[in-house]
Length: 289
Image 1 (tube, rainbow, N blue to C red):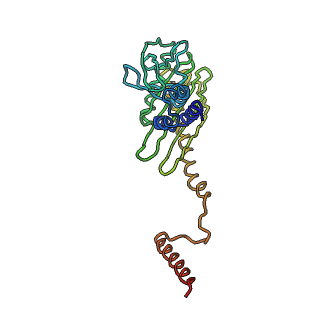
Image 2: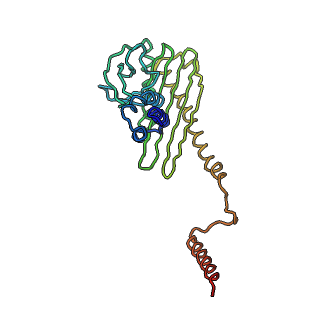
Image 3: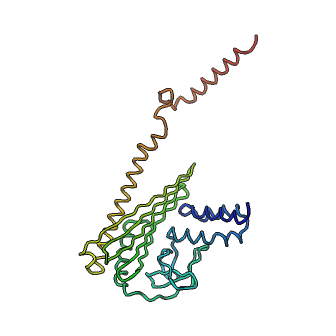
Protein backbone atom coordinates (compact mmCIF):
# COMPACT_ATOMS: atom_id res chain seq x y z
CA UNK A 1 0.00 0.00 0.00
CA UNK A 2 1.39 3.40 -0.99
CA UNK A 3 1.87 6.29 1.43
CA UNK A 4 -1.06 8.17 -0.17
CA UNK A 5 -3.34 5.17 0.33
CA UNK A 6 -2.31 4.88 3.96
CA UNK A 7 -3.10 8.58 4.48
CA UNK A 8 -6.57 8.07 2.97
CA UNK A 9 -7.20 5.16 5.34
CA UNK A 10 -5.99 7.30 8.24
CA UNK A 11 -8.40 10.09 7.21
CA UNK A 12 -11.33 7.67 7.23
CA UNK A 13 -10.37 6.52 10.74
CA UNK A 14 -10.27 10.14 11.92
CA UNK A 15 -13.77 10.86 10.63
CA UNK A 16 -15.03 7.88 12.67
CA UNK A 17 -13.24 8.87 15.87
CA UNK A 18 -15.41 8.49 18.99
CA UNK A 19 -15.97 11.49 21.27
CA UNK A 20 -12.83 12.63 23.07
CA UNK A 21 -10.60 10.03 21.42
CA UNK A 22 -9.31 11.92 18.38
CA UNK A 23 -5.77 12.18 19.85
CA UNK A 24 -5.67 8.42 20.47
CA UNK A 25 -6.72 7.80 16.87
CA UNK A 26 -4.08 10.24 15.59
CA UNK A 27 -1.35 8.49 17.57
CA UNK A 28 -2.42 5.13 16.17
CA UNK A 29 -2.59 6.26 12.53
CA UNK A 30 0.88 7.81 12.85
CA UNK A 31 2.20 4.28 13.23
CA UNK A 32 0.24 3.13 10.17
CA UNK A 33 1.37 5.97 7.90
CA UNK A 34 4.93 6.29 9.25
CA UNK A 35 5.33 9.70 7.59
CA UNK A 36 4.48 12.63 9.87
CA UNK A 37 4.87 15.32 7.20
CA UNK A 38 2.68 13.48 4.71
CA UNK A 39 0.17 12.58 7.42
CA UNK A 40 -0.23 16.17 8.62
CA UNK A 41 -0.81 17.48 5.11
CA UNK A 42 -3.09 14.64 4.08
CA UNK A 43 -5.40 14.56 7.09
CA UNK A 44 -6.01 18.31 7.51
CA UNK A 45 -9.19 18.22 5.37
CA UNK A 46 -10.48 15.28 7.44
CA UNK A 47 -9.63 17.06 10.69
CA UNK A 48 -11.45 20.17 9.52
CA UNK A 49 -14.52 18.14 8.55
CA UNK A 50 -14.44 16.29 11.88
CA UNK A 51 -14.01 19.41 14.02
CA UNK A 52 -16.84 21.26 12.30
CA UNK A 53 -19.24 18.30 12.32
CA UNK A 54 -18.53 17.46 15.97
CA UNK A 55 -18.99 21.06 17.23
CA UNK A 56 -15.43 21.27 18.54
CA UNK A 57 -15.07 23.90 21.25
CA UNK A 58 -12.19 26.32 21.75
CA UNK A 59 -11.17 28.91 24.31
CA UNK A 60 -11.77 32.38 22.88
CA UNK A 61 -8.53 34.43 23.00
CA UNK A 62 -8.67 37.03 25.77
CA UNK A 63 -11.98 35.71 27.13
CA UNK A 64 -13.03 33.28 29.84
CA UNK A 65 -15.47 31.19 27.86
CA UNK A 66 -15.53 28.72 25.00
CA UNK A 67 -17.30 28.89 21.67
CA UNK A 68 -18.24 26.31 19.04
CA UNK A 69 -16.35 25.96 15.76
CA UNK A 70 -18.93 25.29 13.07
CA UNK A 71 -19.79 26.15 9.49
CA UNK A 72 -22.43 28.59 10.73
CA UNK A 73 -19.75 30.49 12.67
CA UNK A 74 -17.45 30.78 9.65
CA UNK A 75 -16.76 34.42 8.75
CA UNK A 76 -17.37 34.83 4.99
CA UNK A 77 -15.15 36.78 2.66
CA UNK A 78 -11.85 36.20 4.46
CA UNK A 79 -8.72 34.68 2.94
CA UNK A 80 -7.82 32.85 6.14
CA UNK A 81 -10.32 30.60 7.84
CA UNK A 82 -11.84 32.72 10.60
CA UNK A 83 -14.67 31.85 12.97
CA UNK A 84 -16.98 34.16 14.89
CA UNK A 85 -17.60 34.22 18.62
CA UNK A 86 -20.78 36.35 18.78
CA UNK A 87 -20.67 36.49 22.57
CA UNK A 88 -17.44 38.53 22.62
CA UNK A 89 -18.02 40.00 19.16
CA UNK A 90 -14.63 38.78 17.96
CA UNK A 91 -13.40 36.47 15.22
CA UNK A 92 -10.32 34.28 15.31
CA UNK A 93 -8.19 31.93 13.24
CA UNK A 94 -8.62 28.29 14.25
CA UNK A 95 -5.95 25.63 13.79
CA UNK A 96 -7.68 22.32 13.12
CA UNK A 97 -4.59 20.33 14.07
CA UNK A 98 -3.60 21.99 17.36
CA UNK A 99 -7.19 23.09 18.20
CA UNK A 100 -5.99 26.58 19.10
CA UNK A 101 -7.56 29.97 18.37
CA UNK A 102 -5.30 32.88 17.48
CA UNK A 103 -5.35 36.41 15.99
CA UNK A 104 -8.60 37.75 17.55
CA UNK A 105 -10.26 40.65 15.73
CA UNK A 106 -13.27 42.74 16.67
CA UNK A 107 -16.47 42.27 14.66
CA UNK A 108 -19.39 44.64 14.32
CA UNK A 109 -22.71 43.25 15.60
CA UNK A 110 -25.68 43.03 13.25
CA UNK A 111 -29.05 44.77 13.53
CA UNK A 112 -30.44 41.61 15.11
CA UNK A 113 -28.11 41.88 18.12
CA UNK A 114 -30.84 42.64 20.74
CA UNK A 115 -32.77 39.47 19.82
CA UNK A 116 -29.55 37.46 19.51
CA UNK A 117 -28.36 38.56 22.96
CA UNK A 118 -31.73 37.65 24.47
CA UNK A 119 -31.55 34.18 22.88
CA UNK A 120 -27.96 33.81 24.06
CA UNK A 121 -28.92 34.69 27.65
CA UNK A 122 -31.77 32.15 27.55
CA UNK A 123 -29.42 29.56 26.02
CA UNK A 124 -26.83 29.99 28.78
CA UNK A 125 -29.52 29.70 31.45
CA UNK A 126 -30.88 26.54 29.81
CA UNK A 127 -27.35 25.20 29.52
CA UNK A 128 -26.57 25.60 33.23
CA UNK A 129 -29.80 23.82 34.17
CA UNK A 130 -29.60 20.82 31.85
CA UNK A 131 -26.04 20.20 30.65
CA UNK A 132 -22.78 19.07 32.19
CA UNK A 133 -20.01 21.45 31.07
CA UNK A 134 -21.96 22.38 27.95
CA UNK A 135 -21.18 25.14 25.46
CA UNK A 136 -23.77 27.13 23.51
CA UNK A 137 -23.43 29.57 20.62
CA UNK A 138 -26.20 31.74 19.19
CA UNK A 139 -25.64 33.29 15.76
CA UNK A 140 -27.75 35.82 13.86
CA UNK A 141 -28.25 34.75 10.25
CA UNK A 142 -30.57 37.70 9.49
CA UNK A 143 -32.83 40.06 11.43
CA UNK A 144 -35.39 37.27 11.93
CA UNK A 145 -33.33 34.08 11.57
CA UNK A 146 -31.00 32.66 14.22
CA UNK A 147 -28.93 29.51 14.71
CA UNK A 148 -28.51 27.93 18.15
CA UNK A 149 -25.84 25.28 18.66
CA UNK A 150 -25.24 23.31 21.85
CA UNK A 151 -22.62 20.69 22.63
CA UNK A 152 -21.87 18.77 25.81
CA UNK A 153 -19.10 16.20 26.22
CA UNK A 154 -18.58 13.64 28.96
CA UNK A 155 -15.35 11.63 28.93
CA UNK A 156 -14.67 8.83 31.40
CA UNK A 157 -11.65 6.86 30.11
CA UNK A 158 -11.03 5.21 33.50
CA UNK A 159 -14.38 3.45 33.08
CA UNK A 160 -13.97 2.99 29.30
CA UNK A 161 -16.75 5.21 27.97
CA UNK A 162 -17.29 8.63 26.41
CA UNK A 163 -20.27 10.53 25.06
CA UNK A 164 -21.29 13.66 23.17
CA UNK A 165 -24.63 15.44 22.77
CA UNK A 166 -25.04 17.98 19.95
CA UNK A 167 -28.07 20.16 19.27
CA UNK A 168 -28.63 22.47 16.33
CA UNK A 169 -31.69 24.69 15.93
CA UNK A 170 -32.58 27.17 13.21
CA UNK A 171 -35.10 29.69 14.48
CA UNK A 172 -37.19 31.69 12.01
CA UNK A 173 -39.33 34.32 13.72
CA UNK A 174 -40.96 35.35 10.44
CA UNK A 175 -42.26 31.88 9.55
CA UNK A 176 -42.60 31.06 13.29
CA UNK A 177 -40.76 27.73 13.06
CA UNK A 178 -37.82 26.01 14.73
CA UNK A 179 -36.04 23.30 12.74
CA UNK A 180 -33.91 21.20 15.06
CA UNK A 181 -31.61 18.21 15.11
CA UNK A 182 -30.16 16.36 18.09
CA UNK A 183 -27.19 14.03 17.59
CA UNK A 184 -25.92 11.65 20.28
CA UNK A 185 -22.71 9.62 20.16
CA UNK A 186 -21.64 7.20 22.89
CA UNK A 187 -18.63 4.88 22.90
CA UNK A 188 -18.21 1.99 25.36
CA UNK A 189 -15.03 -0.03 25.07
CA UNK A 190 -14.47 -2.14 28.19
CA UNK A 191 -13.63 -5.64 26.91
CA UNK A 192 -15.29 -4.76 23.62
CA UNK A 193 -16.08 -1.90 21.27
CA UNK A 194 -19.66 -0.65 21.08
CA UNK A 195 -20.76 2.69 19.61
CA UNK A 196 -24.18 4.34 19.64
CA UNK A 197 -24.86 6.99 17.01
CA UNK A 198 -28.37 8.38 16.77
CA UNK A 199 -30.11 11.54 15.59
CA UNK A 200 -33.52 13.09 16.08
CA UNK A 201 -35.02 15.74 13.77
CA UNK A 202 -37.78 18.02 14.96
CA UNK A 203 -39.97 20.82 13.68
CA UNK A 204 -41.46 23.12 16.31
CA UNK A 205 -44.10 25.78 15.72
CA UNK A 206 -43.69 29.11 17.49
CA UNK A 207 -47.00 30.62 18.66
CA UNK A 208 -47.77 34.04 17.15
CA UNK A 209 -47.87 35.61 20.61
CA UNK A 210 -44.30 34.45 21.24
CA UNK A 211 -42.77 35.71 17.99
CA UNK A 212 -44.38 39.14 18.42
CA UNK A 213 -43.37 39.63 22.06
CA UNK A 214 -40.25 41.38 23.37
CA UNK A 215 -36.83 39.81 22.70
CA UNK A 216 -36.36 38.65 26.30
CA UNK A 217 -39.87 37.20 26.58
CA UNK A 218 -39.76 35.46 23.20
CA UNK A 219 -36.29 34.00 23.88
CA UNK A 220 -37.42 32.52 27.19
CA UNK A 221 -40.50 30.92 25.62
CA UNK A 222 -38.54 29.63 22.62
CA UNK A 223 -36.16 27.80 24.93
CA UNK A 224 -39.11 26.41 26.87
CA UNK A 225 -40.19 24.82 23.56
CA UNK A 226 -36.65 23.52 22.97
CA UNK A 227 -36.51 22.13 26.50
CA UNK A 228 -39.75 20.22 25.97
CA UNK A 229 -38.47 18.75 22.69
CA UNK A 230 -35.11 17.69 24.13
CA UNK A 231 -36.79 16.16 27.18
CA UNK A 232 -38.99 14.12 24.85
CA UNK A 233 -35.90 13.05 22.90
CA UNK A 234 -34.08 11.95 26.04
CA UNK A 235 -37.14 10.05 27.29
CA UNK A 236 -37.41 8.21 23.97
CA UNK A 237 -33.72 7.23 24.24
CA UNK A 238 -34.26 5.90 27.77
CA UNK A 239 -37.27 3.90 26.58
CA UNK A 240 -35.26 2.50 23.66
CA UNK A 241 -32.50 1.36 26.02
CA UNK A 242 -35.04 -0.33 28.28
CA UNK A 243 -36.68 -2.03 25.30
CA UNK A 244 -33.28 -3.13 24.02
CA UNK A 245 -32.28 -4.69 27.33
CA UNK A 246 -35.61 -6.38 27.94
CA UNK A 247 -36.32 -7.72 24.46
CA UNK A 248 -33.72 -7.16 21.73
CA UNK A 249 -30.65 -8.42 23.57
CA UNK A 250 -32.52 -11.33 25.14
CA UNK A 251 -33.63 -12.39 21.68
CA UNK A 252 -30.02 -12.78 20.61
CA UNK A 253 -29.41 -15.83 22.81
CA UNK A 254 -31.28 -18.85 24.22
CA UNK A 255 -33.07 -18.42 27.50
CA UNK A 256 -31.88 -21.95 28.43
CA UNK A 257 -29.11 -24.20 27.06
CA UNK A 258 -29.92 -27.22 24.88
CA UNK A 259 -30.44 -29.34 28.02
CA UNK A 260 -33.36 -27.04 28.91
CA UNK A 261 -31.92 -26.74 32.42
CA UNK A 262 -30.29 -23.79 34.12
CA UNK A 263 -26.62 -24.09 34.97
CA UNK A 264 -25.73 -23.94 38.63
CA UNK A 265 -22.66 -21.75 38.39
CA UNK A 266 -21.60 -22.63 41.95
CA UNK A 267 -21.10 -26.22 40.79
CA UNK A 268 -19.19 -25.55 37.58
CA UNK A 269 -15.93 -26.83 39.09
CA UNK A 270 -17.76 -30.01 40.08
CA UNK A 271 -19.01 -30.43 36.52
CA UNK A 272 -15.49 -30.03 35.19
CA UNK A 273 -14.02 -32.45 37.71
CA UNK A 274 -16.69 -35.06 36.91
CA UNK A 275 -16.00 -34.77 33.18
CA UNK A 276 -12.28 -35.19 33.76
CA UNK A 277 -12.83 -38.29 35.96
CA UNK A 278 -15.09 -39.82 33.35
CA UNK A 279 -12.51 -39.19 30.65
CA UNK A 280 -9.77 -40.68 32.83
CA UNK A 281 -11.80 -43.84 33.55
CA UNK A 282 -12.44 -44.35 29.88
CA UNK A 283 -8.80 -43.92 29.05
CA UNK A 284 -7.81 -46.36 31.83
CA UNK A 285 -10.34 -48.97 30.67
CA UNK A 286 -8.98 -48.83 27.15
CA UNK A 287 -5.47 -49.80 28.18
CA UNK A 288 -4.43 -53.50 27.60
CA UNK A 289 -3.98 -55.76 30.63
